[in-house]
Image 1 (cartoon, rainbow over the protein chains, first blue to last red):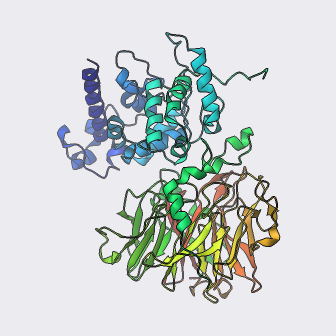
Image 2 (cartoon, rainbow over the protein chains, first blue to last red):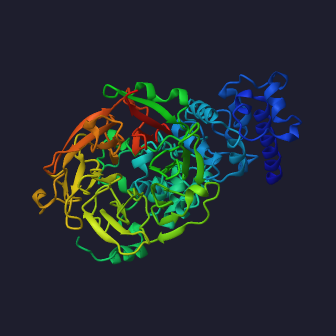
Image 3 (cartoon, rainbow over the protein chains, first blue to last red):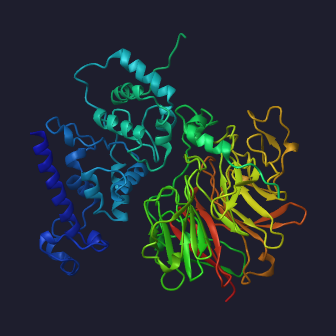
Amino acid sequence: MTKWAAGLLFCALVVMALALRVVSPQIAGQQKTPAAPALGSGPEATANAPAATSYALTGMSYAQRYAILCATCHGANGRNETPLTPVLAGPVLAGQPSLYVITQLFLFREGRRSNEAMTTVAKTLTDDDLQGFSDFIATLPPVPPPPPAIPPDPIRMARGQALAEQHKCLFCHGAGLGGGQQVPLIGGQHEDYLEESLRGFHSGSRPGYTPAMTAAMSQVPPEDLDPLVYYVARFRGPAEPVTGM
Amino acid sequence: MKHVRPLVVLATLCCIGLPALAQQGEPGWAKGRPKTDVALQMAPIPAFPIPTAPDKLPTSKFKLPPGFKVETWASRVLDARGLREGAKGNVFVSSLFVANKVYVIPEQGNHQPKVIIDKMPMATGIEFHNGSLFLATNTKIMRYDNVEDRLDNLGEPQVLYDKLPGGNDHSWKYLRIRDNKLYYAIGAPCNICDPGPYAKIYRMNLDGTNIETIASGVRNTVGFDFDPKTGDLWFTDNGRDWLSEELPNDELNHVTKPGQQHFGYPFCHQGSIPDPEFGWGKSCDDYVKPAALLGQHSASLGLTFYRGKMFPAKYQGAMFIARHGPWNRTKKYADISVAWPDGKGGARIETFMSGFVENNNYLGRPVDFLVLKDGSMLVSDDHAGAIYRISYGQ
């Protein structure tokens, strides 16, 4: 059921991506490849008659385009907690810095960071689109995660916090794990996404925009990954100062 | 010239792997970073993933000495780094972290970049010699033969050497060929550490054999060239980070005894400051002093002797130096400087082209130079993804 729903939504997403590609002169005018023939109009038709098909989407702001193209997976406010489609609960975008977002859209568009849905969308985007979407996403304020069904295990949280300090996660991601510039917000990020990301950086399969994260993770023992993920996903704010040593 | 033993130690180190030298859980560039909020916000600034649109380039904002003019020669060249010229009217352009490409741009026509090598991480060190394009990544040195006749498909390169240590910090390359020797450097694998066999300039035969040390104690040189008058090697060296906002300076160095000189790293910086950690028990007097200081954390990259005839006599035989600009300093600056050997081992320096920074933000960052046959000079800008042409007169 989950996979079926995911497939259906993915198809819908691709159709929307292709539709945007055809009807928006801003995109179509800068596309190097011809527009999708399945929609019945060649590139010339698109270029010559944008008015005929652009009634809905031309002149749309990136906020509107985000709502159509991104919100299904990532949530209208940048945080998707839809429990019925966990496979499609895309990573939290609320609170991510513009520079981080644009570097990741770039990696998806170049086919370096692999995710079928994201690459499909990103390949339709021009340079201006990358900037527009990134700037819009950076306006989404951070959204705290919902209260957990099960309270975090204090022992595991303490272990994760100690590891985060030992492995210097706070060096780049900040004391509040909120990121900045090319560094993402990670505090309260979806647990499955954190797991996939850390394992990817650890194995070298997930490319970063710079080698910083790969270099940092190359020194982290594999058994530390799960405790880090557990802690970061449940992180609610900067740690209380440790006293009474 | 003194011949020094081959890179046995380095090869051994490759087997152990770079992490042996890296700090636990900390990128090499972060070693030595103070634990203050301001410093913790600073990290190397990668080239922006989108080239600046041609009409938004800072070209009209650049300031040059009277009589010089600058124009946009090529735009939308993502991550443009190294520049070298072929024999048949082609300019080769390399890249660093972002593009993973080498481009060719014909000198005739509208200067559209064409990708000739793709999906090649750190495709940064390039040189052209006898019809071949030499390319060095952080792991290997390759040669593409007869390249200008095969621009649509370069074919598989000949691998000359595949034992470079790889890694991230200061592992990208800058190449020059002189007298059938290929010069390259292996930068320190960290901000500040005991570099072992790293932090040296080397040279090898063009077939990858007979590796010799040319200079030691070189933290990270991303630009060097030979004085056309004397044949001496001059190089820029990027000083350590995090000592303070204002110290140390990057260095301009002059090799007078190849293979026998140590330029100070990690013990002494800018010829006068013992390292707070590695300088104990050492004296700056024991190392070669820089010919000139190039500015605090200035990230001095490309260095090219001007061999053309178009520029006024004053600039003929001078060195152009690309000051890419600091990432670990609050106040940003970047420019093209020009330096003259003073004949006594030193050099004097002045600013040549400015205008790369506005409101403490980079509009562009210069990387490398290429003097064209007509005497005009190209400058690459990896931040804006552009190449500018500087000319004089007319």
